[in-house]
Length: 136
Image 1 (cartoon, rainbow, N blue to C red):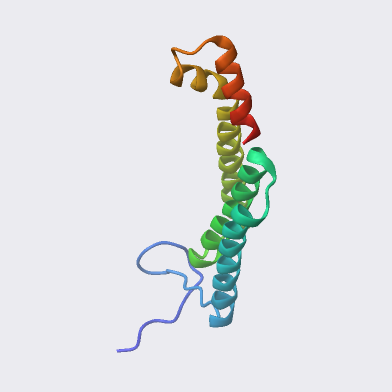
Image 2: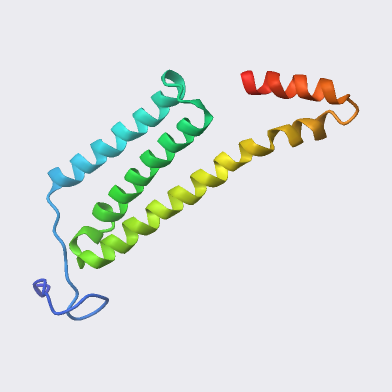
């Protein structure tokens, strides 16, 4: 018994399900792009120093691009209605933005953390340790 050919009647389970046949070379290119972005992420930690905030932003941008590639190609969202892809990409960008701001905000409380760790120290010692921590 031959399976029925793909139709364009609708999305979902059962009758009328749409099949998206993606060429193998497209999937290979996406996989290669993901691997290259992973290497760039790892190399940026060891080779490029953009400061604490810059490194966080670089990692978040690369992670957003990688997640967009996975969702668009491996989850076939690229072949859905364009509005769905725009909504998803926008959501990923906002998540990256919010997580990036939250990670950068942690640097603002470094002095309080140092003070808590060295509770018995004088204020001058705490300031010196805080300045030394910032220099590192």
